[in-house]
Length: 303
Image 1 (tube, rainbow, N blue to C red):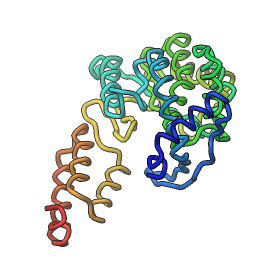
Image 2: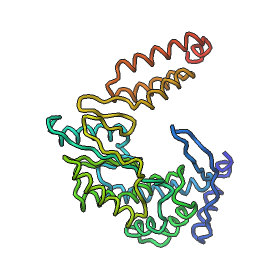
Image 3: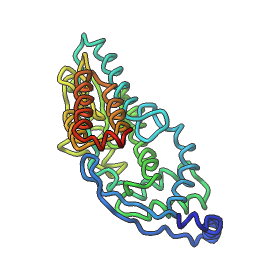
Image 4: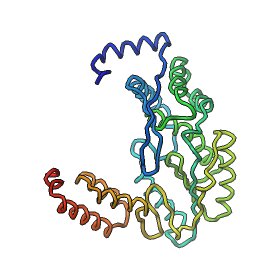
């Protein structure tokens, strides 16, 4: 509200700072959220967030066409549910509709946002962006936070996709893995044998270390047979059905017991609609209305 009160003057001041290259990114305000694990979020001030939107609006249309199809984080017409359904189609295809065995490897990049190397990221961007003024501004945004990228900037999600697109291209073009999906720093590779996955693991680990200055989380490399189920993006996929992750189910039930709005209930039911969860859906509906009856004030508020 304070920025908008003198909006025109503030915008012209930003324009002058750009022309004279005196613009300096401000400090961040840090706080913690539980999502469900604890994350340290860093929030920029309004003036800098205006810049983030401007940078995003110019860079994203340039880099978006270069991304692989099976990158699902923070992209238009992608997201978790598209990724989960794509995983199911991959598994059907490689297992010949569940008649052949197949193996799944799920990996996680250790401290991804904290580990993004500024020089590597800038060099990737410079391959496509030649305008010196644009590069100056991109550097100002990237180098405003250290180490890595702040979780909280609009630009951080875009920069993450730009950074890991190098990895995606390596997996698809060099290692030639057709059945590969990524959501931010989580990725899955599917193959006919464990030996193939072991070969892929050595290749991707080497590339991450040498080219992107990153490493896989050693405790989050999971190799499983399809029939054992694979946990990805909040759901566990089995050959003939898909269920909600147990931790997610417990969290939803706990939230409902604490009291939620009917809008939140519909949101949870939407999440459940992507799994085989008729009984669970009925359970949380009953729990929701039972809580409403116990607390008539909440019922009046929803009306």
